Image 1: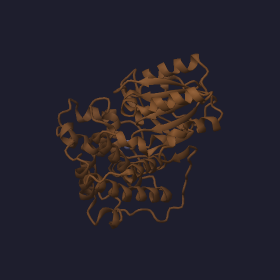
Image 2: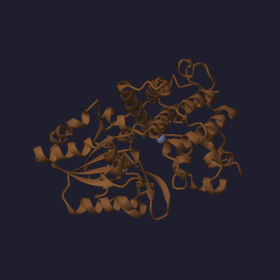
Image 3: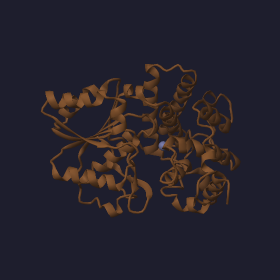
Length: 385
Ligand SMILES: [Zn+2]
């Protein structure tokens, strides 16, 4: 059994995004636009976010009326995936008018679109090879303010954007320093209108980012510190949720754990559950967080069976083994039966393995037993060979 790293001094940390986490910070949006001398901005926003918070459109209209700044909405229909097709439409819009900035308002999907859109006018960005590419530097980048309305992906502070390649149905990341948002504007009051299922699924996503940062092969003592802070807050949040004790502090905390999770992801990356989720996302109807909840129990079981799990401090697990600790979180968030939905999928374990993309060697199981880890998990998930 491994232990959490206490003696690795190879610490690397970089975050070019300015973070503003404050209740009602969105109301000060015009100040941030003014401060950065921005005058014309494309607002990429989901229909869902607009419907949940009608106050948003009022706010943008007010900025348009009382300031010189022009905010022009680009509304993304509900259930639209962040895809190269959508990105191409945004690029056309950006190319025919002289925008100097972008604001993305929505869940991780919308923020990811905004991150990819912020560099899409650069000549090095070719749509045929975009998904799976890394951009450390581009000549033309639009200033990007990312405003999360769900609190789970932490996409506002990561250098990855998960985009569906419309030409072949594969989902993979566009990565690199160039796509970090310039400002992460995190207003926890936007969480007040989150539907119950999205709330639970996104809390679980935040949990996985901290948990996987610790389990990952890649180690960074500084990031593990943030991950542990996040996990102890997750315990709190999950308890409050299960007792129906939801107050303003609860929303501050979920916004904060999502932020910490994002910082974890962009430094230590993630493990196999995220690779499986990415692979199956174009196939099933589960959300990112729900998919992770389906994959987690078997993955943890495998970590323990192969003795590659890193134990967590007792004050976080309450002395429970990792499988029981995670199961308890899943039960409290009502996400503990999702593995059954995987058994109904019309796909073979071999096909799942083929769809797995991205960095798999960061997973402790793959690191120990190789691709066999993926095949065995896929068989267990589907309940067939
Ligand atoms: Zn995630």
